[in-house]
Image (cartoon, rainbow, N blue to C red; front, side):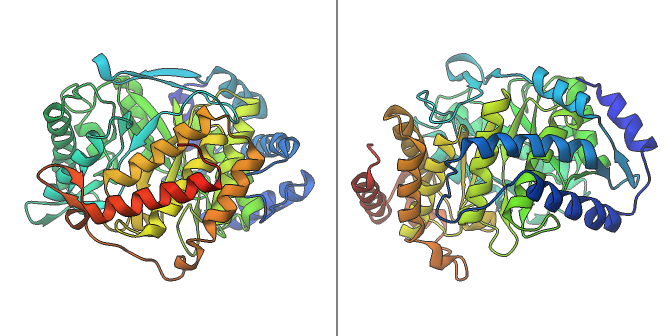
Length: 454
């Protein structure tokens, strides 16, 4: 794989371009052209793609997109270009297995396959959601306590002792260190000292990442995120995160956020752009693993049919042509205390599990509010594990997902935000209240009747 210094050389010496030209002349035109050339077609009745030959075409189109377009560096206004040979070599050399965490809580993270009988790893947490310190700690405990949750990816601390954490502020350092201190405290309290984290989410810039690159905060067996900006962009803040952890020796998680309906266009063109994001992130971000997080331009949620289709095909395409390790992210529309959130969780988790990814979530209310709890992450885990153990195939999974989407799709334009954590959980005993538990059992029963064997 090319070195990070080579990427920096290209970031400072590559072809100059205005960002609007990159968006409209390269992203938009190239993605649409490749979607037509490779015959990529979205089918609303196949949220989980059934055409594996198309998955292979999607992969080929993604490689072409990565080589033809490259990665735009906002800080230098230059395009970081890689050849097709360089990106395919990076994909061949990417790790297919990692050990994360420590002691009895260590886990082996591996590249999954379509309808893989091996159970997925489960990363629980209200990923990215803004919280104050107390809410962050209380909610984190509800995920750490769940035995089916292997690792934690929780929210961002946005208030420290009454002070707002602003982008670029010194408080990003304070907030990110508090984040790791509280996660460590909670893991120790509940006897899971070695639990692996995806962390350093309380800082939008590189300040927080640099501040926690130490064993007492973010260990080398933990994961931090190196985002790619939408679409196919980076900047010095995010490249600084890469540089720091290349030196420190931690695990880099590539985080692209392709937008269905954004600069790339509809789901087909967005899918190809998403593929290129994973490929370019493998090289530029020196990625050990990837988080799949497509969002809808209007509804944000990963629960829409279009975004689930993109996510499923990303997993399928890479599993058939590479050994990339991919986590499928669940960003749900509704909030804790609503039955609709639980329907979203089962639909997303089932689609992710059969499409060769591990599970991550649940970010309820599209990550806007801390209306989330460990119970829906338990349901996410149970769904993914059940699908693997019963050998769920793509057609059966697709039929179940189509049925579940009908139970919540009306909420996209009018989200049911639910209630805060303390209204669905006993915060002293760290367990769900009866009403929330009742809805959980009702949805499991309905999913069982559809064919999911818990």
